[in-house]
Image (tube, rainbow, N blue to C red; front, top):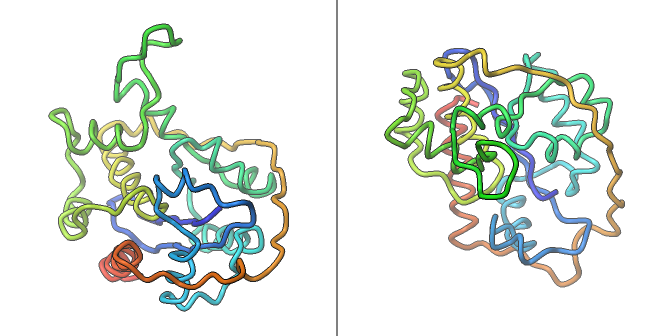
Length: 232
């Protein structure tokens, strides 16, 4: 668990607050995943230092802050793409108290992406990027609320596949669906098995130093601009 992000928004699409934190790995680092999100240990250290992070370097010791963030806003529910994967990182007590809507399952029919030959079902589950292409960017895209249109215009293109950027893309999708197909959004509690990750063995891998490069500057700039526009 290298990052955790959440965006709070109202029915009109105004962003009210943002949670965005970065963590060091407690398990062996997977270089294959780095090609997806770009979060190397050195970049994680650089981003944490630039953001003056005064929270635990490990998510297993900080998940209560994310739960408190949601509780503070008394939210109706969370929207998560592939909810059964992400919610499994939270203890059962949080899962039971926080209903969610899985946009991956909930948007399958609306996106109507053809299923691969030999697979079950008429349509495939849309990846987040596919859902964005269909509902936000494609010829059959849904018109956004005015507040969302202004936010999209101001923010421009999101960084690669990192949690805050994914949250922003999910915000774009959800506000459109909320306006055009509100009955699709149905919040329900999940009850998934939670396996406590092993505890960290130290503050950081030996010899590791912060890596401030173009990728980290992009992450920091996206965080800064979104917070400024949202007034968070």
